[in-house]
Length: 316
Image (cartoon, rainbow, N blue to C red; front, side, top):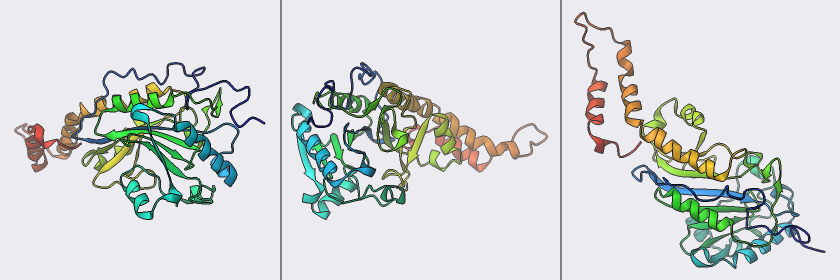
């Protein structure tokens, strides 16, 4: 009997069905460099589920091990800057695991009730692991929230290079079919990831903007979302946030990355204007003297000094 994804199924690419998205993951970005005074790291990730095997909440131990075997075998054929090695959680020491987690390379054991009640931690850490290339810029998480989590990442703000690597990794032909639906797109464990499953994000330092009460609404209007430094259900450390696209379905991978880049231009280029508006806002409540000259508050004076010094804006 043929294995999952074989038989009469069409040959597909590692994670990308070219019959559906022929050019959607083509790295045609022309302006993909973030200002590294603010952006600490950039990443693009998605998930893929192997057709014929249950999703993690219903996955048996045997199916989970089959996922591990299928994925590791497929990845062993990658060459060049994508070639790498698989590391099973069962063979790692706790210290090695924690170091990878602290460096934002590896996932941790689920502790959220939402995940544990869904069976995500069942048989932990059996058949879980991470595959990464030698530079740790292209990674595959195996049997975390999804069968696979595909990640391209690096320090700094070169989103163009990160996305190009991401697309190349997805296009490596392996002959296995992934769960895909004509109406829903790629099928993943969390409904919020239906469609592309893609999340393009940056770790960015926002000490000023993050303290504004409108911060969440600003991001929502830009179709972006924020997470803590360590991801979902974590706090922001030293004002560093994980900012990424909010939408997953109904748009292509390329357009979702462009959305994030548009945020760079719409937010960074208007930052000084926005700050000046915030600083000048209290003046509206001050009674204007008969001379017609509005008194300058201390906030105004300090704000003008800061705005006149470009070096003062090393962080957003």
